[in-house]
Length: 472
Image (tube, rainbow, N blue to C red; front, top):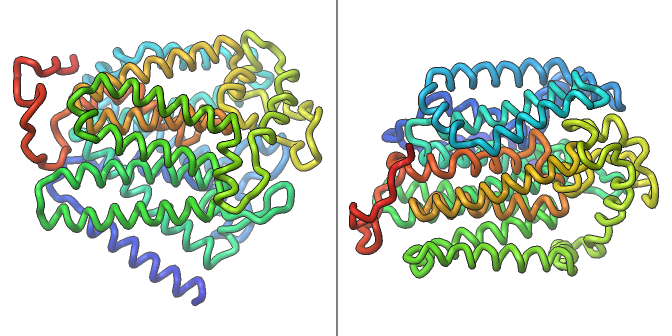
């Protein structure tokens, strides 16, 4: 079957998934399409790349090398600026709710303030500031979701809309087009789907697939109806696409994170955990400890072997870490926001093979933060993780459905950053990290957007005097 026919079949199938997942009763704002578009771009390729493919001229407005990275693409700049302006307009219309959410997000605002100040000592302060505005764009899109009239329903729609577009399209490109394949720096073939490399494909897939698992569990607890049945078909299909893409991507870290995240969601939805929310802390800490030990003592190699990629171990990462650490220009303050690789990356050569030189990532989120923001930045990230954990646990006590998802994203983002740069701008992990920080309490306190639930016969839900106080 040729690509044109396959495209028509996949397009019809995607339209069918959207039709099955429809919900006319959901009161979501049309502004929800803004974070859908934003996350679809972040989770695939820049707009300039898609335009270049369509026009047949390669990366439109973007070449290779340092100058191209510093200048960026005018097409991408226009798109992101337009989305940011539209998002800001929406948030101004929801000013009261937005201000309430931001007032409760002091640690995150402190982090953003330090990132802005760090642009002053960047070797390219104007470029650093442009990248900081993209980070603000991530936060703005998260706020559009959080301030939606029905934020829980909005979350489900984010997963469905982004997933129905990117995951089937990845399968289409991998199987029927050369655009879905590429070669790694060492010359080995890799499947990249709608993204630019296999790790990016694995990342967006495990992020969306976790949301699909969560959505399915919510639907299974809802009362039986025709709507529930067709939505279950759509979301189970989305999970199947996710598993297929993860298998094709051969991204060991993403597979491990999906297993950990899905396991955490499933276990926190068990009745003996839901009835005693305090047990969730022991569960999360146990899973995090076991997963971290597995990564550091051969777990990644085991996952990679299961995917048919023998020899990929954490030792490959440690060589990179040993090479980048001595190059950091300031251990306390770092090189400036998102500036290390443009300003000092050319000096990262020691101990690396010819295939590993020319890096643009430390393959460790915590080291990446240290290179750009120094120990001050690492301290702020640690503070955000602790704050996010407390907020996610609080959300679990208010609303176990929402809390389980927030805990899963916080855990997997933290684990993913051990072997990949999970805290860099324009990455799905950072997007959902911000969602945990600013949305846990607000979304868990909302009463709209949940499917009709079966009666609860225990806990504070049946005793108004024991119910948690609403979010201020």
